[in-house]
Length: 84
Image (cartoon, rainbow, N blue to C red):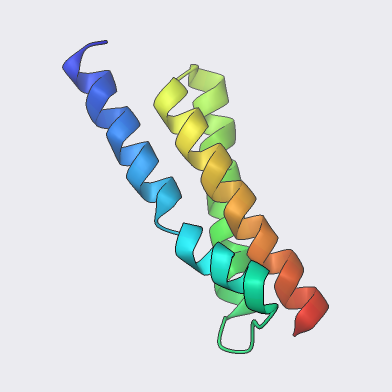
């Protein structure tokens, strides 16, 4: 693995993991009162588009990081719509 891909994978990992504490908190408490639905909806759309872009150019760091981030963000959107 070259330096460029290593940087890409590290950036993807850190970006994806950054939402993990929020996801865990929502999973445990089922409370989403302080979260903005629109912010996470827009974030989900952006992450999905980055995922599509990564697939189109076959860039594994972009694909992996945004797939995880999209999953986390979409989970928050779903929980927000269910639990307000």
